[in-house]
Length: 377
Image 1 (tube, rainbow, N blue to C red):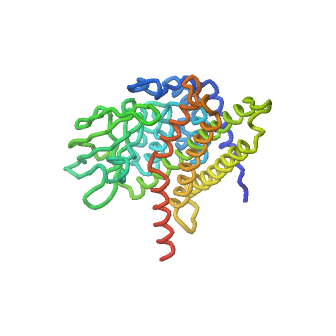
Image 2: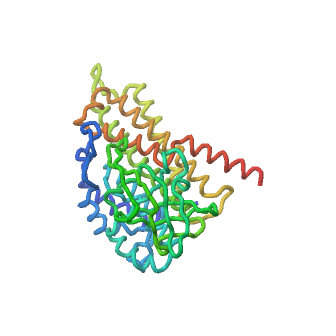
Image 3: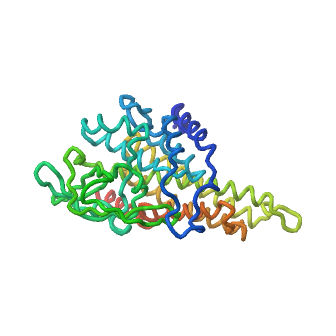
């Protein structure tokens, strides 16, 4: 079996490295140094550079000006973005566009995908539910009213909602189906309440009160929400991997320079064993990530549905990235808590990624249900 990446996937990663090369994690606003929202919005200059490098339309077909690539290529780019804590809605925007292309109507696709693939408008996704612990698909209700849909409910912790032009919102119907509604920021009946994430970023509680959405902005196709959620979860795993790899590199550099008793502490067995354990975590995170991304990209059949691979990847990502940053803080000692050093930012972002779209325990339960169902079938 050939596990190498295609030329196009490698080229996407190389282009991303070029764009992110000028981004300094030291410039990322720090939650430890502020009591309010950390920034007015995402990094618009970086967003423009990503658009110029054709990295915002990776998953779009060529007829929409995209690259026609797959989830593996997107995860390659997300991995690079996390190394520098890039403050852009790359995951949410890309996942929303891919969902609209696959499941949305032709008219909406023709009108929206090409310009969005070049960065305007900006899309994000409401995927955390009402409290962050309940299913996102049940947080908002949708009912037909003539030619339109009417939405009521609340989604919490919506990233980039104050800056995005459109939010893709899952909602459930009386027929126990999940639809996806594309809600504009100026929509009547929409209210945004500010929230601050673990990483210090500005999130929003999205409240919908009898918000009337045209049928042309509602996706009713079966499997749309499941596909979107799987891509978001897998992309989150890619972010965790890139962040963890950078943190381990920072730890290796520091322990190679820091001396005790006349020797670098990296040469001490206790330090080397901890670093080696974290390296194993990262390789497991990487292997499970590419398995999940490949299953999404290829639609290849398996003993379990793709949700099983996504669950395994998310379990490893959530547990692994937490262990990596905890070990890094331990091996850095007091230096790791210095707010002039970027490690504390990586730690805060890691905690946010660990819990994003649900902690590891939630995916262990999902995996158990899938295994039980498979055993009975």
